[in-house]
Image 1: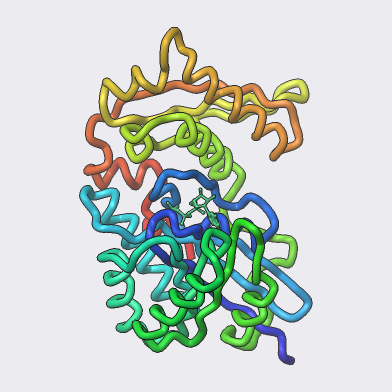
Image 2 (image 1 turned 60 degrees about the horizontal axis):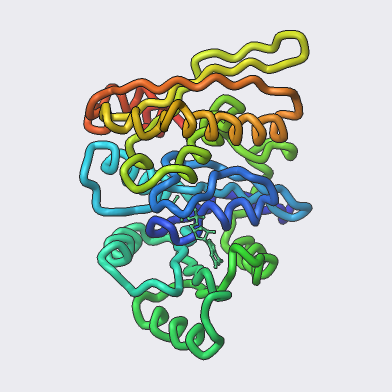
Length: 300
Ligand SMILES: Nc1nc2c(ncn2[C@@H]2O[C@H](COP(=O)(O)OP(=O)(O)OP(=O)(O)O)[C@@H](O)[C@H]2O)c(=O)[nH]1
């Protein structure tokens, strides 16, 4: 039997395009996408099953210099995915200079002795000569198994990318049922959609300080009633999130409700509340309670 299956960890600096790539490869919205760096917090497995291979992609939080306990947990989530996978796909943004974040990742992969494929993303943003130059520069930095220029946004080179991945996967039967596209359940995806709408509608101060917890979910007379709590870590953030006469939170609620209706295919009635949990990102117990520590959840 020459069927292949295995884990591919998609790692990279914040904003390199990991979630965009994952969604493009799977063809469904698995991970939320925003312009805010460090959006992804959990290792989300997107699963793609074809006639010849099953690719299990782990979308990891952007590796960065942590300033709080939450940042350390997020980096740890990414490292765990790197240790447990068969292939590491390191995605970089071609428009960004090589920086300390890249140095950090480079050091890490050197210790792991696994195939490393470098995905040079966002090539749609630069002329061809510049792309070629960047590919040559990266080639000098590490003995990558492959360097593949892509545009996750424009779906450039993605079929070729899948073929290359397949070459590095071990032989074996599928690891997950064919129809499964993600290992996260519906409740998780509901919270992520709400979080995405908040991130897309708030400025710098808010994004990293929020967590979303689903408190209630009930189907009643053909309508899904949802109640979610948005946690912030300062009083001032609560005011920002709620907005003038509740306008901001209403806008978030309506946008989330619309997308959830589409995703779940039923009418949705969403209620949102905001609660302050002072300095929660430095409290291990809270990080676990909000489901952000992968190791605690036994994911993978
Ligand atoms: N032009 C262009 N933009 C892209 C491409 N891929 C991603 N982007 C944009 O880059 C931004 C970040 O993309 P994400 O996929 O959220 O990045 P990420 O690496 O998952 O980010 P974190 O979750 O913060 O670690 C978004 O605005 C994307 O639309 C690409 O190929 N070309």
